[in-house]
Length: 62
Image (cartoon, rainbow, N blue to C red; front, side, top):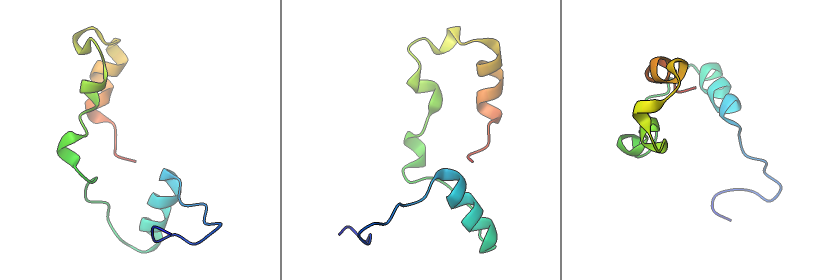
């Protein structure tokens, strides 16, 4: 069952962060965080719209 019960709906990202806050825990990093480079997802990272090129590095994990 891959550690899930039948009928389990799992978590959304916002649910996960809410559960972490409720448990007074802190999000540290994602699995394989070195591979999570959002800029690499774009075909032409140098030609991004200004709001993305300036805002993407500032965006929170959540």
